[in-house]
Image (cartoon, rainbow, N blue to C red):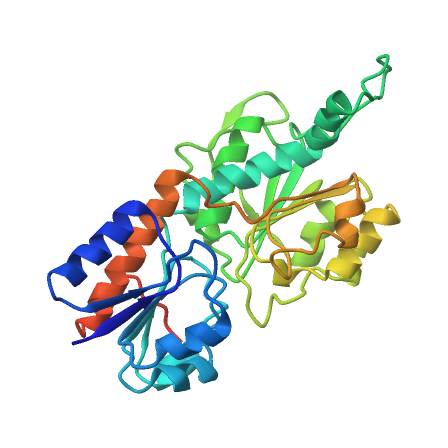
Length: 342
């Protein structure tokens, strides 16, 4: 009988579905009984002989793991959209399908991205801390003044599903101009113009195709807010480095809800401490979790969140159910419905 390994406890509906299948004799279920990550040695040991692996971002799937699993492995299903932790080429070469969970977390991640932008731009964590620690003193004219979003130029790096969803949300803030940079010059088609409306300089309302494809360097020079929503690839790894931060406005806000690996964090620290850019908001870092002693965490102008872009109950459950769907198809020898191609 086939055996599947689940490397972390998922939502209750997803685990109930997996357990019911095992109870019906469809497969043997090997589940890690913790919501925390499975230690690497344990993963290597328990992957041996498995037909399917249901994993999360903390589980690195490489040649070592595939060797340990053995030739009967059919599918690796990850509870994530990103799959930089999976050696897709190596899996494909061995006939192992890879599935991910696209679409279901788009709205939640876009909501978090805009929340992070607003919180960073308007200094919300610093302001809240002043109330708690007794630094709420007499009012003065520039105290806790942040940056305006209305009328600003926003640059989105990577206008895929999440980037487009961010753009649709920002339309309600009357931004002045939306720029984007990425591999697809026609990506503005992802933005639903029926719901995106901008106030023009003359006060008229426009719903025409506003997003403008812009070379990255130009986007960095012109944008008041730079939002990274691109995938982590060989091309985007450490793309936000000292040279790129040097192109940005000294008043600019940088927001990253993509992957920590696209940012040179030493260069970001230098940019924030020397006034090269004004502030940054990060939902992702490298590594994760970030050490509490990391220099970025000492800065008042850098807000760091613990990778919670998809952290709503409905979204996480939908991700888990989609991952189970991929797993079931893979062990049945069918094409996974949400597959990743090498």
